[in-house]
Every structure is written in C-alpha cells, then in structure tokens.
Length: 247
Image 1 (cartoon, one colour):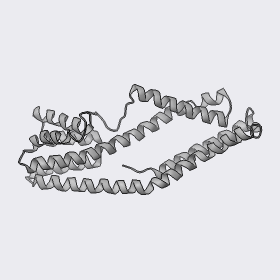
Image 2: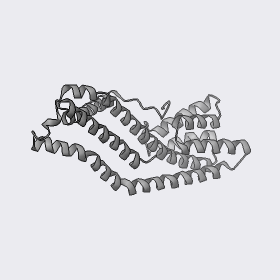
Image 3: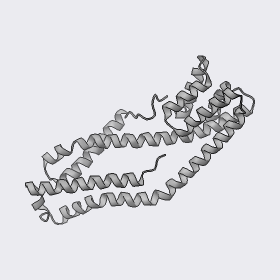
Image 4: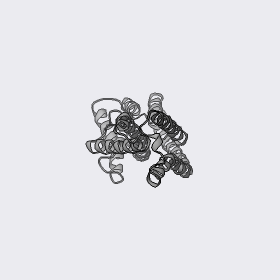
C-alpha cells in the first residue's frame, strides 16, 4: 500500500542507477560545453534535477498502471455485486478474481486488501474509498469514490452505477491509449531533436578537435558556451512540455 501516489521514493538500486545516469549526463554536457573539471562541478546540480525529473516520470507511470488495474478491479467488483454480495464483501471476491490476473504485489490487490482491512475495522466503504482516491490522485478513482458514496447515501442502484463507472473508465483509458499511440512518432522525432545539438558538438569535437578550441578555457568562450547551454536546456524543457501527455 502506497501512502501517497504523488510521491515516489527510489529503491536503493534505482537511486544508484539514476545518480549514475545523471553523472553521465553531467559528464557529457561538461565535456562538450566546457572541457574542464570546473564545468563538471558547476553542472553537478543537474544530477538532482535529473533525479527529480525521473521521479515525476515514475509517478505518472505508476498512476497510469494503477488506473489500468483499477479498471479491472471495478469490473471484478461489479461481477461480485451482481452475484449478490454486499458492497463490503464484494471487495473480498474482487481480490480473488484479480489474483489470477495480477501478482500478489500488484497495487490494486494491495489497495483492495487494505480497503477490506479498514472495513473490518468498522470504517465505512465510502470513507475507505474516499481515502484511496485522495492518496492515489487518480481522477477516475476519486470520481468513483464520490459516485459510490452518493449512491450509498441516496439508495441508488449500486450495481448499475459500478457497471457504468467501469464502462466509462474503460472508454477513457482506450482514448488515452489511442492518443499515446498517435503521438508516439512525434515523441520519437522530438527526442531526436533534443539530442541533435549535443550530437553536432560531439561530432565536431571528434572530427575536428581544434575547431572549437577558441570556445574553451577563456572568458569569452565560456560565456558563449554557457549561453548556448542555457538555450539548449530551455529548448529541451519546451520540447518536453509540448510532447507531454497527462495520463
């Protein structure tokens, strides 16, 4: 069970991996733009920025996976309630249905198990679902919790509501999948554009080592390269914002 899906904590292996990747990025940029140890030191904060960016990416990826698993959880829940189980016991049956699909460590199984444990501690289903929605930060889960709570208060048709919600979530996820597929080619082109400036510098450095020498180890050259690096990083950020898709 994750306390807050908006916060990602690296495992020890992930921490080592992404710090090393950040070091490689800093080394490449420092070598190409400054060719000095001082340049590497000045760029070292980018390791922290790189790790933060990776955390944001992993948060979005985890939420997307949780949304997919929640859709299957809703379908299992709907089948259990249709079979005559109460809302409280339907989650237990849903966990049984989900285990052949997902491994025991899957987020939805952990969350439904935690939800069942809370219900057994005399916490209402509505409250447990609402807390789940708040922790997840996933719009579909928050909406489902609100609709479920309203239906319980007003005596609405829980079975039909859960079926309709599951159908809506499935449709939304399919639309998002189609959007991701449509922009995949553009993302690939954008990623190529992001590495082209670094590729050009690398090519010039390797093919004509003396061509860029006037831009290194002197105040004017450092000034020019710093401006170019700033423009490159700014452009990199703009490209990321353009191609980003909120899952």
